[in-house]
Amino acid sequence: MPSREHRVRARNESAWLLPNDGTRANHRLRHDMRRFSDDDEIDLVIVGCGAGGSVLMQRLARAGWKVAALDAGPFWDPDTDWVSDEAGSHRLYWTDPRVIAGTDPVPMGSNNSGRGVGGSMVHYAGYTPRFHPSDFSTRTSDGVGADWPVSYPELRPYYEQIEQELPVAGERWPWGDPHRYPYRPHPVGGNGEIFLRGATKLGITAKVGPVAITNGRFGNRPHCIYRGFCLQGCKVNAKASPLITHIPDALAHGAEVRADSMVTRVAVDERTGRATGVHYIRGGREHFQRARMVAVAAYSIETPRLLLNSASRRFPAGLCNEFDQVGRYLMVQGAPQTAGRFDAEVRMYKAPPPEVSTEEFYETDPAKDYKRGFSIQTVSPLPITWAEHVAAQGHWGRALREYMSDYVHWSCLGALCEFLPLPENRVTLAEEKDSHGLPVARFSYSQCDNDRALARAAQNVMEDILHAAGADEVITIQRYAHLVGGARMAKDEQHGVVDRNCRTFAVPNLYITDGSVLPTQGSANPALTIMAVAARAAGHLIASASGGAS
Ligand SMILES: Cc1cc2nc3c(=O)[nH]c(=O)nc-3n(C[C@H](O)[C@H](O)[C@H](O)COP(=O)(O)OP(=O)(O)OC[C@H]3O[C@@H](n4cnc5c(N)ncnc54)[C@H](O)[C@@H]3O)c2cc1C
Ligand code: SF4
Image: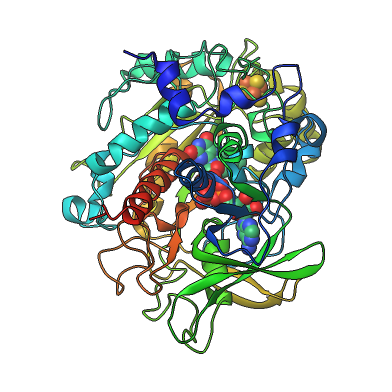
């Protein structure tokens, strides 16, 4: 029986394709990568090289498809582009203008979207929990949210594959569909110890993991050095992101990654209604890449924006928008963050921010006056983010300075609350234009009563945990995390944009394979699920091409 390593290598060699000489990017692989010309009619062009786009590209490259992924941002080199410094990491985020609106507008930028090859996972924290089986049928079970056209058991094999490929480390997971992780849990730092101590005192089960951070060496990827810079792009290459987990393998199998290429429009033949390729801007010049099929994986804001900006005579209200579904049901998780002060030093920066979590409160509790639930995790902000936390609480001047000089005594937990998908929470096009003259996204967001009740409940539990662990002061701020939805999967075109295989209802050779397609978000971090959904869509495309798809 082949070892686990051989099984992973047979499916994804990325970790072994990284250099073994102290540098962190395989320049030879990038230099020698296949390059298609705009005039080649390639099999598939993918817009966006993040969580969903990269997995799709890697799977199809392995199946022998001619595939290229275009990304608006750079092809990062961790050695030269990244610094272990909060302020210096600003370039990792998508900071182009966006208009926000609604009664509870969501600030955009560093907290939700990335730019460049690897996507938002370059600066994500590294938590990789699965969704629970209940997340796939909340409408039936709880009367809120939506039912997916795909069930948890259909996604399970893809979760298992991606967990091996990242790989994920953590304790045996008792919640949702109980399962094990391929790597043992990491040792925990001061913040994780406090969470475990407080939770144990209250009888709340909390577990170490699950994180996509190598615990020990994995291929040519080094182990974590516990310096806490995961949200700034891990310079060490210990934290998984597509830049190191799926892209090298895709390149080795003949895919092209075309960086610094901003796609402006998906082209559709007015007569046949089929996608013919994408218009994009590179080096200040307009190009058109021909392709037999197109996949959009540009993140929950940019994917609906691109569809709306691709309006044509045949699709006057925007591509795939005949039923006014594009941009709707966009979701953010409510993410209150509670910090507690301890007399002893905590030094929460001395470990990856993702360490310990609990999903005890994930499911609907019939005794409560709200539906669905929340998870709680360690978050460990670095000093600038800590200053934002303290300032958001209203502390300025001398008080802010005192909190800052007391930083090493603070511990910090964050909740992820399952805010519900609502049709009026959506992306539309704003009047304002970007530097290419394209209308920017306008994102309107308002909470419902259930959302507010969840955030209050999560805050209470976090404050109780920190008090139980011995905190003498606790402060909580309200914030948001993660964005999914906006081009959701549904059983028909009146309720969503794509079918269960991520194929758009309106254009038969156009797919969407990023977080936009998620109909609900649970209270789990979304990246693993996005990758699993993209891997499943890739399997469907490969099977369809060989005549085997259902
Ligand atoms: C600070 C932070 C922490 C996070 N922590 C976690 C975590 O711990 N666990 C977790 O599961 N999730 C986490 N997330 C969320 C996670 O990273 C995202 O949900 C996920 O990466 C989204 O995947 P995606 O494929 O939808 O888009 P992305 O990964 O964002 O990829 C989209 C790509 O498309 C490109 N693009 C956009 N528009 C265009 C265009 N017009 N033309 C060409 N390219 C384009 C972008 O440059 C980008 O590279 C975090 C996010 C942030 C910001
Ligand atoms: S703590 Fe570990 S995973 Fe995070 S940035 Fe440092 S080495 Fe990378």
